[in-house]
Image (cartoon, rainbow, N blue to C red; front, side, top):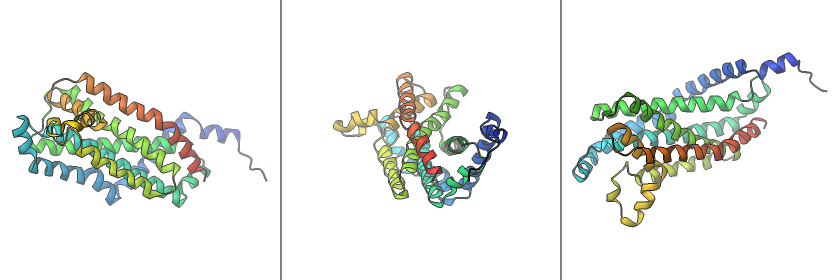
Amino acid sequence: MTLFVSPAIRDSETSTAVLVRHTLLQTQRLLLRSARNPVALLETLIVPCLLLVMLDTVIGGQIQKFTGGDALYGSVPMVAIVGALSGAVASGVMLGREREAGLLARFWVLPVHRASGLAARILAEGCRILAGTVTVVLVGFLLGFRFENGVFAAVVFLLLPVLFGLAFATFVTAIAVFTAKVTLVEAIAVLTPLLMFFSTGFVPLAAYPTWIQPVVRNQPLSIAVDAMHALALGGPLAHSLILTVIWALGAIVVFAVPAAVGYRRASRG
């Protein structure tokens, strides 16, 4: 038996107004779910703030003696980005569990705009990353971190982790929707500490062995940290900022189509 769907209903489900409304509703659902998830709260807000305090307490003084500058201008950007990456992995795990539970398939058969599910995840992820970044910066302010280059530079500073995190979230989403194993998504979390420990936000570049310095200097997290350092304190900015945007947009371009195709396939069961 063929199910007849009225053209008016079909058109209404694909209209721009419905897309906006359904995206906002699903974004609210995802944000509420994250707020009620202890693991998501830990990885998004609490752990990054504790990590920042620990870094400033344990090695902040040593780095200041070594470089003559405040270590917070490296550790605050690094921790903000690490929080974005960790939260992206947690969101990927939740996406995988929703797929296993059949929730994505249930949304597919409801009169919901097809693009709203993925659009809501992008919007919710951006909101989560921005909230985490602002929280880390507030803790940094309590420790002595300040913006020295004005309001515009501060706004760009806050937006860079969002761009970087969304690029990583696109990669995680592509993995989450193409594999049935949540453990594979969780394994991606190993990348986060590796990027952190071998970045210029953890310790100055000169503190690393000479043979690994080119890797540390040119890996994405170091480039983003250098850009945010320059935005907050001053210094050469154009090179690191352009490379950060290229890294992020390049990752989005590469993984956006697989993520969208995989999300559609996972939704259709």
